[in-house]
Image (cartoon, rainbow, N blue to C red; front, top):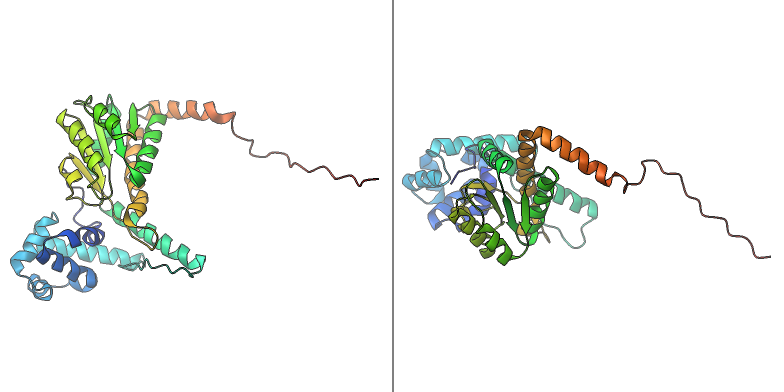
Length: 308
């Protein structure tokens, strides 16, 4: 599996999501860092161990669990991310509370801040080399299957639509049985992409596992890089979400998913530039007749005649 969480990107967002599911001692370290990231960035390994009620060995294990070589690299990542957040003037923790009586202008601010921060954290953690690997495979694939349910299904449909427009042989399945049977027909040189915020959606896991059994390149897009879905994937892209009232994590993950998928789509288009340019021109021309002209004459209602 390719680890796509960079050593300096998206760490705090990842800790918010994965921290509660870690073993107790590791979870305490995550909580300590999230409680005050700026201070944590300057703590020695001994200080962090004392504040979290753990040991230096546990802090080292925590660092390596996240993919770092040691605590020094983890501390640099925290410092880099807190510095970036301060420069952008976004708080490390965004309050997602929305009360029933809040003005829509306030709600707009909360939603905008949450979505923007989620996209920033997701972007910071993207491994460009992994994107290039997946894009290259899609550009040369004989068949691409994309599968997602619920909110993730919305992202899957959008990605399939984009790839279709540039002549990629892609299918999006909404039925789990159809997805499984078509995954069984994949082979080396094909690509299967599974989307699930939780990484625990059984149908998506089974579909990706089936594709992997037949030699296809498998790609997971999930908010949990240590989830069952991630375990069956060759490449894992981690999304970061920011919950707000009325918008739970699964509903808020679409923006981050689309960021990753859009980057892959553009990378595919770059690799198939001539074919893509021709396809886009043809498709625009095909629907042009169904668009209203940019400047249409103003229609006036006829005046009503006064009854005589």
